[in-house]
Length: 212
Image 1 (cartoon, rainbow, N blue to C red):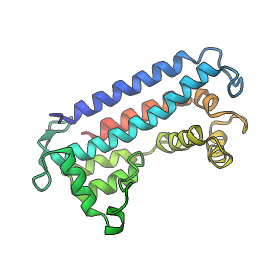
Image 2: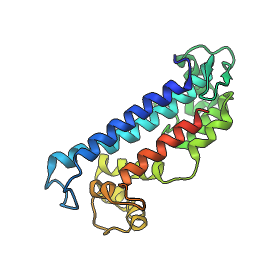
Image 3: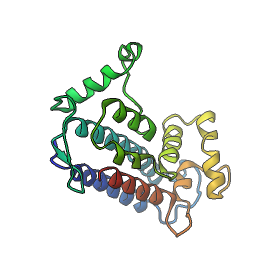
């Protein structure tokens, strides 16, 4: 178990930086050339989008479980005590499961959707972690969590339904409605960064603020 939540933030930030690096390494000259016409760059960028989504989900889960086990310090030096004598991630997860209705406890897949800030905060609330107020930062204003969810779902399933879910992002960014997800993530947003870089920045800031 980490001694500080700063260690969690550091690991997450390092993974985000790696995904940003491998995404941008594929970007030169890659401007709406169509699905699979450049298979290697597109495959790498698809992986980066999916893994960024996964890294965020893992960070949110770790933040709740580590905070539940307690004996950890926030990035501002505040000491978080354990909840109800919990001393490990396994015990923290068992405690969370016990807080849900019986029908949900009996499910094979019962855990919250950790990538969803609302479900993560709900889990932290059910447990009663000592740093719940700070975790509200996970749901602060931004587009990254919903954008990533929709893009990840398309990349994993590639069907008409998941493609339609991307339309709102295309309209917001101001790109052609036929643009692929990989090219959409490469689109430039105000300030000159790519949409993918905006996601990286937003998630890193949310992670840092939630660990204070």
